[in-house]
Length: 284
Image 1 (cartoon, rainbow, N blue to C red):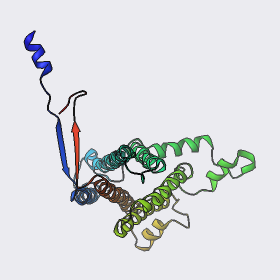
Image 2: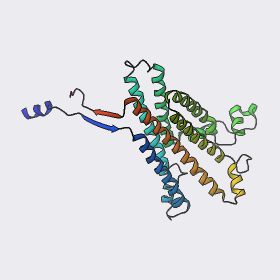
Image 3: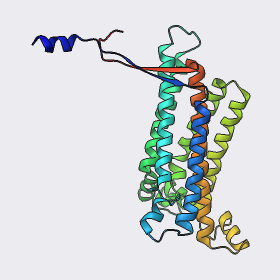
């Protein structure tokens, strides 16, 4: 009994994890970039060039598939971005009383971005926007007459690409514009703002490529059809590498944002971020 009481009353040492944040954002970005370029190369060699004769292996490295390693990396990377933004949110909220520049609106904006990127990570992993597009298609079958079958059925009939562009994309665009406006004010450095615009450009280009992918081969806007006809390439070749470029640009856009958010976190807390892990009630 005495020994048990002695063990319970023994002091517990706190654990401090110190992260040197000066070079962290750039190193994280380089790691992500190398991984993303590797996915592109592995897809071209193992999947497209069929260096492996096993279909499951080729599908694992097929960057165009939603069950590939590249898609897992994209979802994980987006979730890490969400975690970094949550850290920024909690840091700002903890300093609210001491810093008059940290307003309720500012904290709410960071909270919104944290929730948005948390959802985006889930969306990448569970294909939420694609499935919502499929639900929309079943709810409102395409119709050439808006009067007979409703506006949404007519809208789906005249829209030439994927249904999710009609249902979810407007919400993504609105959230993206909010993020651009808010972060433009938060990020004062010119280089940081340029990188922010580049990230938006990468993501916008990826969405545009996805729009072209959803077009029928005979559609006059189908750029892919122009390419495979002009260069006498196979349809699959053009569409596959266009999809590879699309996925790479999406991952690159998130990598740039991860670097920017890490840099902002470091600038907010200083060059070192200390995370203390303690048991409740234990004092150092």
